[in-house]
Image 1: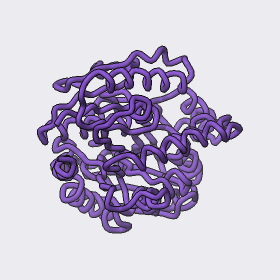
Image 2: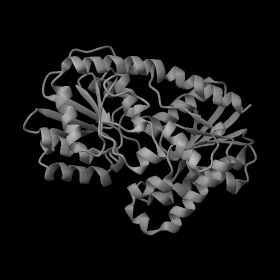
Image 3: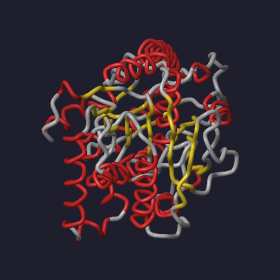
Image 4: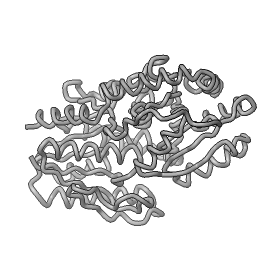
Length: 384
């Protein structure tokens, strides 16, 4: 079975999308697919390979990063059209309308699989607020998404929240496969000696507005005079998000408590995990997290590493970890609740250890890469 897998995200890359794409294409190849991966050609952080080793991987030139995002996305679409029209593919596997709409333009007659993890019509206004003044553009994107959902043989999502959202868009459950994110065996770390003070918090991943980092900064202000804390923000450090966060930390008088770094390759990040007291994911209750849904890969990595977790009581989080069993979950959108959670975990080493042990056990049982690959192989079998 010949698969053309196209994704408008760089690979390999530390961002959750990049990790998920690599897991998926390697899983498909392991299941017997003959796969060609097509991604945009972009600059990579130091320490990251230019392409995915061991996979037939081609990259489309989309222009410099300074060019408008939409221009680069449309150039990628044109590159995907060339690949679609060049060979007799059995399956076209894609992640967004940027590349997916190429199937419509090329009148592709094979099977299509839509990994519908995120919808640009919902997410782009977070990146570019001025788009809210252009409803006709967002409406066009929503139309493309809807058409692709209807035409695809299978649709993949990462959470039950995502499944419910797809239902509101008319996608029958029988067409959808729910495949949460996963962790490699090497992510399951042996317990390490407790790090020395100050209390070290770790956040990994994108610094996007839907991650709730502004709430976390305010929580740090609440505990500033009660607890010595260092927050390590390990992210992709995009300027349009990093600079405002730096200014906000300065304005809130918590800048000395926050360290921006990364992104790091997986083995370097594992070293940081072993020196961390608590993994944090302060997700707010916004439409991206509660309506569209997500599956925060950072939480699975924290669980696998045996870290106690502080996060918020959202359905997408509770699918991964339960309050007072495998994580400490607090009310969303509340800096005060986050602060109280920090104080609770900081003052109870036995609780931290209990949560960490249970989280690692749960990650091994439900979110190990082998489980993900088995589910993916089953999806592939349904396409025969």
